[in-house]
Image (tube, rainbow, N blue to C red; front, side, top):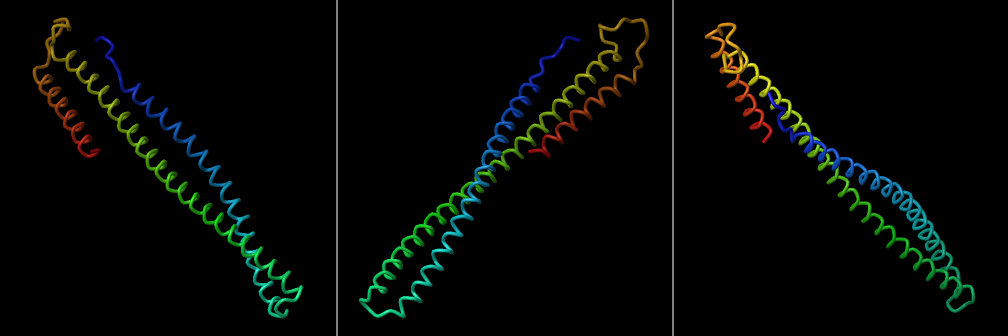
Length: 182
């Protein structure tokens, strides 16, 4: 029997290539996520430190009279602490948003990789079933008394019916698999 054209290999290869690219992208996102976590820790530490400085300055301001030189310096320090605290808070929130966005994209990537893997398994299964069907067709042709077989032996009359029934069973099994996969 002539070699049949097998397109399954090409499609499986395309799926594998797509999966490799997505896994590389996921690895890149994982590195970015790690860096953002480190950055977030630093900014959270900075925010806590400036909050503590601001509270300490507020406590110290109460002990100075309005208009004294110490009070003026503490007011300036208080303004600086407020600005720094605000800056760290804004940057910390941006980092949180960025991390949340990355987590969402990573989740999408994982789902897509899972879908691609399932598709690859289905194609592989379908490829195996197709090959088995071809093998069964060859067996039926060989034993059913087709013109390709020499008439050196008398074919078993019941064998042809049994082989046809086996062929129908394979087709039904394939249809059942396709219905369950859908």
